[in-house]
Length: 552
Image (tube, rainbow, N blue to C red):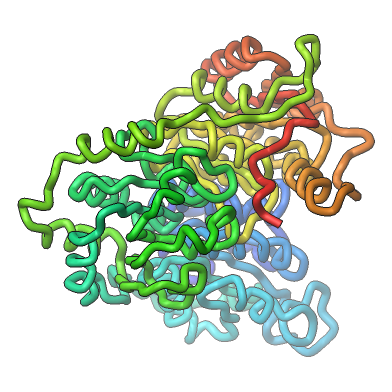
């Protein structure tokens, strides 16, 4: 016989989980004790949302499920935002919360997590694929199996189990779980319809979204682009899915988009291949009706957003992006496998890329550096294969426009749910999963105010993440957006900001404050040789206009 707490730890270890993240509390103590018994390191986060974000970053890099544990009541509610962010990224994360006692439910209980208090199962339902309470030991094997299946198969995503304290201590017969590989059709019947549309197109373009990251279809989209010589643009969420220096890359469109991408999309495109994107308002900012193509081929796993943003004839390729693109490339004739360089030379001749224009009122003796210059300097200073997590705010859109991608799968950003501060913990979790990789996050001072204490988690666990903070003492994207669209900004500027270097040092981190490109280069070099986490504060021009004003 074994306890349910022991079975939980046993099965997540079998899935390849090497670390779990969370904050202890009475109702989940048996789980924490079992982690120690079974040599599964429990990383103490500083806030439950940080634990959920760390488990999510871990899932991205370890390609298995991430696990976050929170106690009953507020421990559970604090995890909900992290679950919403994981759902937006389609990440397999198991959120486990507690409840004081199943057999005493209905009495007055502190931090009651049932319908008699704060019903954790219902609260998690909108942000997970499955949310349930394990009320008896005999149903636990089925509930755990179903949760893991939902999280890891088909369209991956977060799941939640609420397991009361007394149920965790109940004994059951040991059992096995076998998780199937997938649960939706791999190959779409629409491929045969798509082939002639592509072959007849005279001016096609590919738009890559976050789904390319989720399906790990980096090589496949490159093969598709090169087979037909199709230029490629990325959405904000698709940043990092295609090398920006590839001859067919037009870089980004939408918020943080480039002039090169916009010029091509306005040149009379007759076919758009949308791959793994819902085409939300951040991805289509600046897209007007006169840019509509004759046809769209849309690769995605669900039909909900098909033809919503682009109401033109659409061939829907439903299912696994990676597999469907493979089949499409295989189906192409040998004559169609042209040399893409010739096509790109024609594009480059007509639409030569220009350096993005930016406006800054900082003078030569200013204590600030342009954010554009800061991002470009970071790109020059960081190793080419550095994995970067962009946070929500202007800083990431500067990066989307100016941070070159050499290796696909090295830049992650979410333009859907958009939690401020998540990148700090995603970077921590990713570094735990892949300690040999250089992992960094780019965030703003507003994000640091929300979740900056997770730097302490990295310090205490000696997790060598580079936390890069662009500081301009304001919520910059909101500040500039309000000023541009309403004539004034309210509630977006800090009267007294944060001295990031001092804050980081108070948490025990190695920290730097930079005002010039030279200081950034030196700080990154020192941070990369430091055996532990480093925080690099960059004082950026508070009056610089970010590339985010296309969005209302």
